[in-house]
Length: 152
Image (cartoon, rainbow, N blue to C red; front, side, top):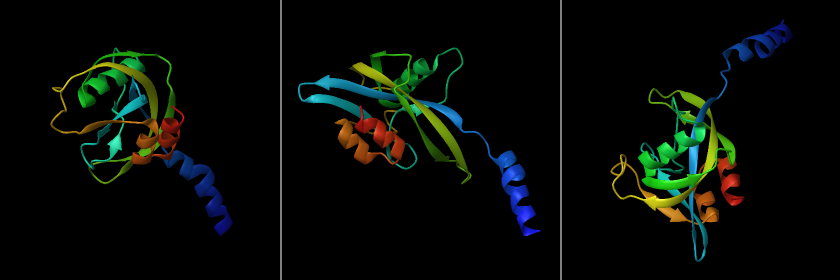
């Protein structure tokens, strides 16, 4: 009986209850300096963790264009160059206001920053910092994003 219940749970009920990961898009903002490449991290609004600018895909925009829009709103990237092909992706679980956890898959687009503004929509809600990709990898929580930064 227990074996039948385990089989029912694992092969029927659990797959029906498991939701596919929702998609987000992120901008891996970077610049080339005399000492090498630097990436731009921002703090999250809720926990203050270091993250990439990211958000939901936007109607009427490609995923890359949506990521660039997030880079403007969250980090002040006013002018940039980007490719429509994702650099990679990472998964993470977003904690919602009600305490629930939502699994997310995030496509990451490389965005070469040409102009950064001090005044942008979320300037008063976030901090931002330029750092080497290796240093950035030590500051983020998501293992797959860490790997992506280390390989950038």
